[in-house]
Length: 296
Ligand code: AMP
View (cartoon, rainbow, N blue to C red):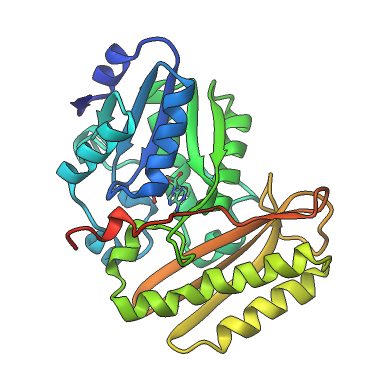
């Protein structure tokens, strides 16, 4: 694996079909599952690591975002990356950027409503990374279901020549969705955070048992999360999977997304619900403790 810092170096190392995995680093098994999926499908696997200031709406979250480049390099290489692209701030933003990619509609609800400017920051950096690295495929996690819909919409509307691949959520053995921010949860907060996946799984069970009322499904998750100790409920919504439009009817594949805060850590999670098969996608669970907490 080669570590490079300039867009041109990524392009000159690319051979055959290129797969890009975009991350903000502090890698965990969720990121590694994307790298492994790319490894199976492309000739050159590029992993980018950039903590993108444009997408943080809380400065303290940006400052405290976990960072460990040596650890990331070892993990990315072991998972099959060929090129690790770690641009400096000056490569990504040589001067104060005045251009933003604003994706209408799909970016407005849920995370977009709670985090003003977040998706414009995401779409802008994803657009830059696509333009600069020119991948054939790019891999994203369903953990960020609305982000996946925003990226798919941007790619369609701006004709980026890249195929977007969405991959399942990877969870800790008890159910908590892996997130780099989880390292900021102390053990007791991590136990409280389990309420989020627990509530989503309960709704997934109800869906699989035949419940189709959006009002009842979202009300039951809200009620459960509002009743949890040390959990601050933010939202629970059902949205159509392709365009993240909040809906009152489960006619096509949807995701039920929810957000909570535990202490100063904000957590999002979701389950996808497919009315055709009647099956809920709860993602994949690790059987062993996550690498996230090794040495922490
Ligand atoms: P991040 O580093 O948090 O910006 O995430 C980089 C990519 O990894 C995004 O496509 C995320 O959706 C994906 N990702 C993050 N956490 C998980 C997870 N637990 N399971 C699957 N994919 C994930």
